[in-house]
Amino acid sequence: MPKDFRATTLERAIGRQLAGWRSERELSLVEAGQRVGFSSAKLSMMENAVQPSAPVDVMALGYVYKVPTPEWQAVVLRAQHAERVRTRGPGAVVNFDPAADFANLVFESTVLRVFTTDLVPAVFQLPGYTDAVMQTDDPVRTARLAMVREAWATRLRDKDPLIVQAVFPEAVLRPVVGGPRVMKAQLLHLMEVSEHETVSVRVVPRGAGAYPAMGSPFTLLGFPHRQHDDVAYLETFVRGEYVEEQGMAEQCAQRFAALRSVALGEGESLELLAEAAADL
Image 1 (cartoon, rainbow, N blue to C red):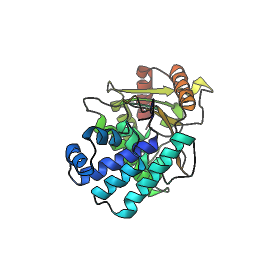
Image 2: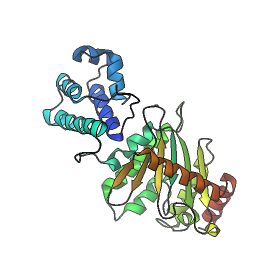
Image 3: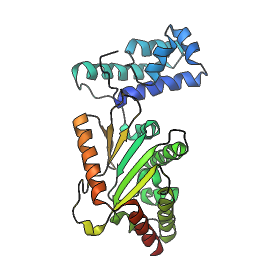
Image 4: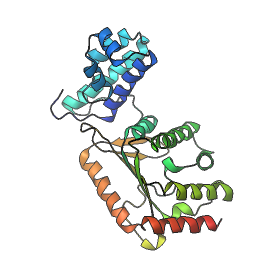
């Protein structure tokens, strides 16, 4: 393994694909390792992106698992690209869509710091709210938002639950998205989830004036493995993008800390949510 290895989101997606191949064939790590000639430890580290997945190893797994040739070839190409980026810096474009991968990253994270500017954070959106927002948008994006919500819901009562810290301006509470009934249900849901000990919801009041990162929503994800650095996720209706350069991720962390400092505390934010719900 390269010294002080840090897995990129692409390498983690490759590992997830390898784990999916094995799971589909109902093989244990030991059984799969015996078939391909790897130790179970090596296979586990590849699947969890704790070490790189060499293209030749991906090819061997595709062959042993009898994966359709076009499918394993596509993953080999991704592994080759990941290897080039790791050894020589950014190279050719690879077919990897962060927007499609984001729910997986949410499921794997331990801390989620979310700043939105005009919508309720995706992890807390009710289906009716999401549908109202996306009714004239891409249905694929709607499905992806649902996957993000489900990823958080699945982790809510884990022995190692996902910690979510959300900050958004008061303006998020005022548009009557989907009509009064849908919006009121959404606000009540926000009040409910904010009472979980692993959730922090803070609102920037309109009287705060200008505030850090104004107009620039982002999500910052933290992970349990030492080899997995923090990743920032940015999204528009055109595409999603991961920001993995650690200097930039640290800038997002600093902005988020500054946002929390200008936002209301959890108790005052809850009161503002209740007030907005009562107005509907």
